[in-house]
Image (cartoon, rainbow, N blue to C red; front, top):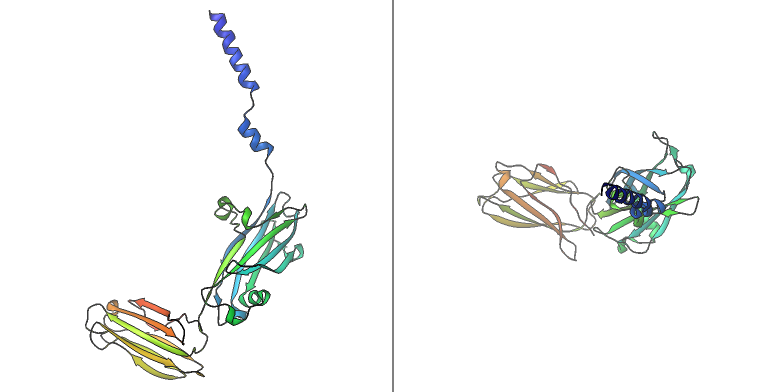
Length: 276
């Protein structure tokens, strides 16, 4: 009986050794090394009113199985609101320098102005809230290409940080006066006015004060005339700023736009979002 058990055990071991581990074999048989564009520190804002000085910047570094030797070029595409893309530029190996890790590195900059020009758009064809999509495509010398569709979560959220696409929302931050009506809605949570707080509106150097001397709420409209060159809205602190809420709504003949809304505001000049 002991001999039979021993023989049966040997048979099991032999069979187990002969059967392949199909899962790991499938992985190894289909394993292909690729390449990624590592990107970090994307910075910048796109301002409708200053397209030429609205700059997006990201540092990119190319990783491949030959430490950068497989890179042919990187194509930079732009689109508006995920629409039709156009090729903005092509980065060749000459545009990259050897970085501190020994791999090709390049600081990519894309302005709102050049994106709009490449797309052939006039200022009436885009506005605040629209998005410029910047997509990168890495092309290798062996014909392979990698872009956003190839970036799984393990790349977009890992050390490699390789989303291949960056979405820049266009803001409307005035660099001067924007003509129209600015309605300032004021609330005091205690119901006894703003206790000395106010908003100073200055148009071409002429200041006027808007405030809530008493009560729980109030509203006042200030008109910035056509031809004005400068404007500012500054909050002046009172005794109980924690009770204060205000909203400034802009209208120049179209739909109302909330330019800014704050509760318990800090003192100083405010940055409005105002789209013509």
